Image (cartoon, rainbow, N blue to C red; front, side, top):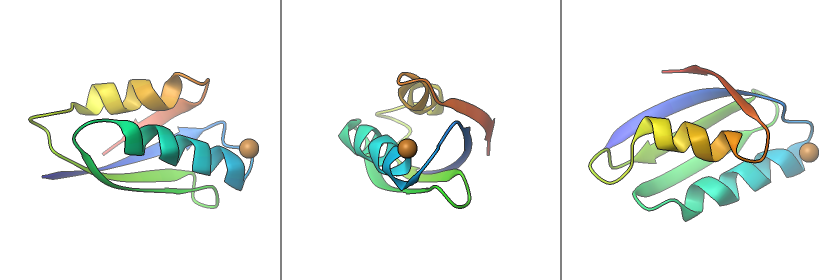
Length: 71
Ligand SMILES: [Cu+2]
């Protein structure tokens, strides 16, 4: 299991953060997600054998948000 922290640009409210969380929760291999509008961060616990960090970033960016940094 791996932990990723993504800094997201474009979240405008708690609803945006919730929408990103719903998308990430649907991704196979994702075990736990928290997305904070206040910090602009997504914290994701995932299985790197099932899903890649690149794919998670693409999922966040699909509705138009931008992943600024990953760690
Ligand atoms: Cu919003």
